[in-house]
Amino acid sequence: MGFATLTRASAGPGEAKATAHTGRKRMREAGGDMRSASDDDLLQFIGLGDEDAFRILVERHVDRGYAVAFRILRNPTDAEDVVQDAFLQLWTRRTAWQPGRARFSTWLYRVVTNRCIDLLRRPRVEAMDDLPEVPAGGADQVQTMMQEEVTALLNAAMAQLAGQQRIALILSYHENLSNGEIAEIMETSVFAVESLLKRGRQKLRQLLRNKGDEITTLFTND
Image (cartoon, rainbow, N blue to C red):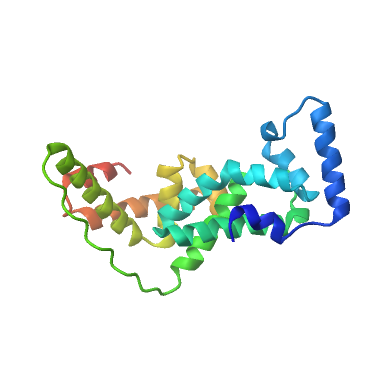
């Protein structure tokens, strides 16, 4: 099921849709634009069954949610499923959303990372990718291959980290979140996040120690 079909699969009652339509009309009359509405405003409309508000919220956050899921799972199909499930959960439970309890982005990170952890705990058999052909000639191509090799080694090392360590590192380095924000998403303390990051970096250094200075120098600071 694609994102465009989420609202059709869980359409709300007609009365709620009529109320949402009235809210949109008032916003337009006040000179407002649905696409410029805050996440909290969109969530209020979504709670009334507004499919347009839901679509805008999905478009606003889906890429970031997918990026986090893919970095954790390293599987595009699983990452897409995780993010789709998260937004479907939002739509099916839209009337239960409580404004002010958490930012939507925090909620999304939490749902995505928890679902990823569930998937990581399941045993699975991965098929080996076909080896790529070596491109012909050129220093730039050689440099590109070297960079791709470094990235592949780093991704392989990240995949060997414990799930909580991997998620903490991804949220810190790739999403540029503070330790406090990570603690809120992972529902733990800042001290626990700092410990996860430290142990994760130490484990990466251990795994990459013999893989070349290009990678190990990235993780020399605790």
